[in-house]
Image 1 (cartoon, rainbow, N blue to C red):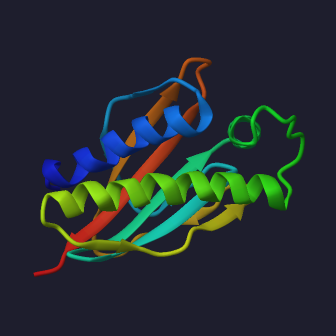
Image 2: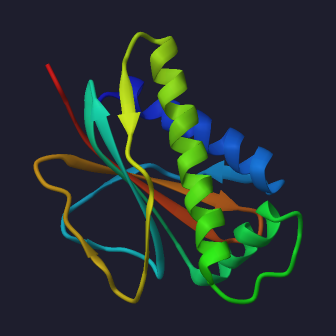
Image 3: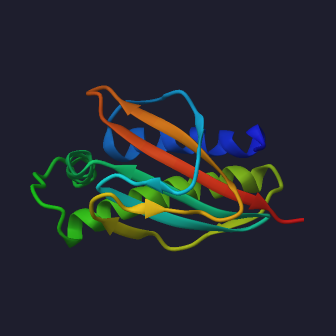
Length: 156
């Protein structure tokens, strides 16, 4: 796993979460996960193509998803994970990965992202194939966590 490939995800995540939600986020201890692994209640999946191919999975609790959706909608109360709330958390993932792609582009590395997919359910099992899974815990002030799982392989 190339640290040069992980840093753009860190930078974009912290910047975009702060800008889009006004919430403070810090990076926890980064570690490698084994596949298969279980996702949290709400998962946003975005694919990577180009010089780097793979996927990024954002996994978080429903309570945090609702808080983020509310923050992204200017504080409007969000009490259910309806289509509008799913759209907001999907857009957050899209913004983070779009910003990440821009950072890579400035380094001469071309990547594209797929449209986000939102999955909701208990004990979802995820199995990225043929790649290492790096988990970056994004820690919020109230103790909530988004796990950003990055799995990729470099195209030659």
